[in-house]
Image (tube, rainbow, N blue to C red; front, side):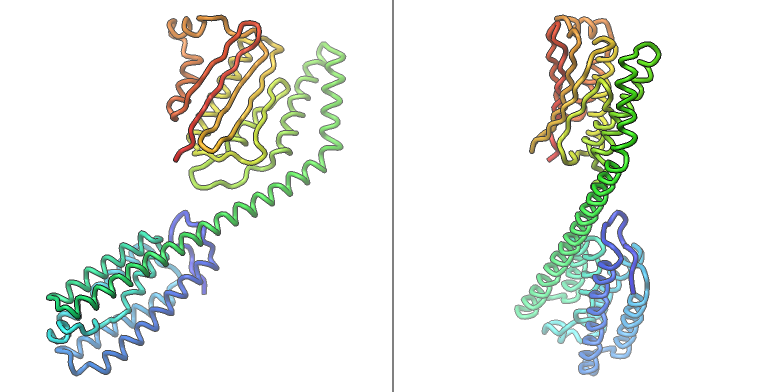
Length: 382
């Protein structure tokens, strides 16, 4: 029997999910049998033994319901936790007060621990801790007044319950993270294989034709030069595509800056990036890409028709640096300040503003006759 994923966004697959819930189901059934056996031996000592049997019947019905139910929504899990705490509290009204004060087992015994384990699987260690605290409070309320022996016994049970919720919940989260990493590795391997296949298939045909058109059209000049320029741009983009391959899946909220920048390579734009994906929060990637495009637009508008641009992406443990450099005439001293004073926000708004918003810094190196260099540094979150 398989169970669909209980939590949105979890990477746990159906097989692992089914195994975890099967363990919880087996524990719940065993705990129910243990509770029924203990009550059968001590039923005569209860003030209301028939009602106690009724509570056990409800526990049995709920156990059967969860065992054969293919999924557990939030309402079901809340009811499960409420029943776990409720059966513990019912002991105070059904059992003899002297037995309760003497530290006798509650009516459900360890059956409520199944709810704690279920919450741990469902919501990780935080869910396991929450459910353990709820059941522990019910244990303390059921005990009422403390004696030295009963207090120690209940305290030990509470500690074990909390530890079980934390450990099982943490194990479930580790399993989910492992499955996500494995899926990402498999996807990356598939992307690499596809990239290699594309490179083999098109290198000896399409790229050679585009390269020939680019070289021949450039030599001929005139109208052929425009065709050569277009062919050259498509050749660069196609080479970039087969070099980088399809974008690999990333963690939730993350994006690959390397892939975002690489797709803007062209005949006069060279993109240099690390060999592996550079993962950053999606907002930072979007801002860095937009700022880089703004810098490239400035090159196209002000550096001349034939100016070239180079984009360098550098990844460090604590920050990421994107540098845009061109071979244009550069910017004369005071020009940026004059543009800002005149109300033109091209560089200050499109580049500096975007980078500042994500906690980064921008440095302009402008030397007349030697081009312009824009260096954007963004710290890594955490």
